[in-house]
Image (tube, rainbow, N blue to C red; front, side):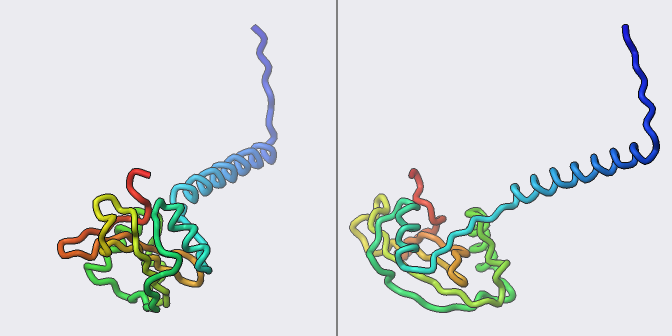
Length: 154
């Protein structure tokens, strides 16, 4: 058996330890950033919004049915907290936009299974500075429901 010993001088050992710590920090930071990544969609134009809606699996009209400007509350009520939980499941967080103005675009949905012949299905996009910050698909009938933007099963 052949054994070789290597003697490291203190400055070299110190540099090796510092290098290992920096490498570990960078790897940790990259993993943490990837795990907390939020989705981002630039939807500044009607064409962008329609393309996104179709990408989510929905059929809609060529123009939104309504658009209004809102201010995201600085303090969330219980209802807003529940709605924001739906947003977080989709990779959004309205908490990042508290106190800011956003536009809410509403579109009719024509291909929701079980509701294809009704006017009760709509998709809402919440956009701030051209960026999608949230949204949902809902049924406006009595006893309706709400879900995320992606068409289930597509």
